[in-house]
Length: 180
Image (cartoon, rainbow, N blue to C red; front, side, top):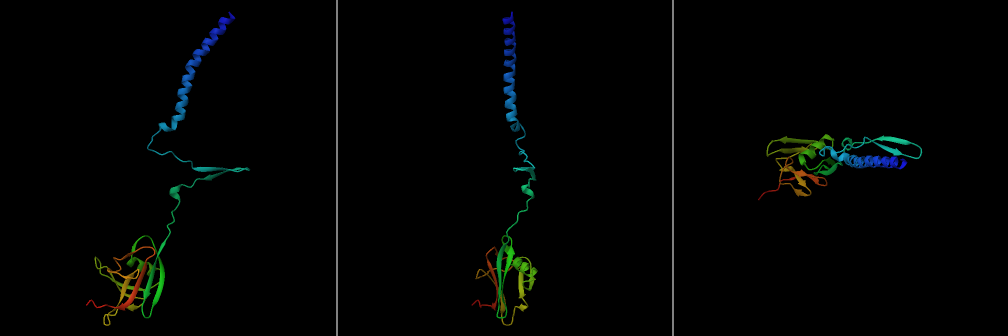
């Protein structure tokens, strides 16, 4: 009888195991795949802090979110020069990207580098430079401020000519060339 009780006990244990083993396998696979069952369009959230362990203690350091870190743009420079019989100067003017020569003059004047007097005719005419550092265009002698970009006479005025970092803007006070 003792043997029959043991066989019945083993039989019961086998039945229970035959039910539990597949159940454990299914639950285990669900737990392993659980993060993949969520909404795939939303990225997983990152931890809000880092834990730094040293031999003596544990420190919790807040995580710096990438979106809150300001991106420092490196300012680029344009060389601005004036050249006349009485006045020759050079400045470095900080710019971002490509800007008009008019903007370079505005930035330089705002920094107090030079005094600019101009007339804005608007539209396609744009700004006409009347004087730089109190040296005015001279209609009688036909001496004017001419714009050169990288040592080339600009075919357009200050409003339409553009420069980028590394370029040189030269305003040269010189006699108008005859077109003949």
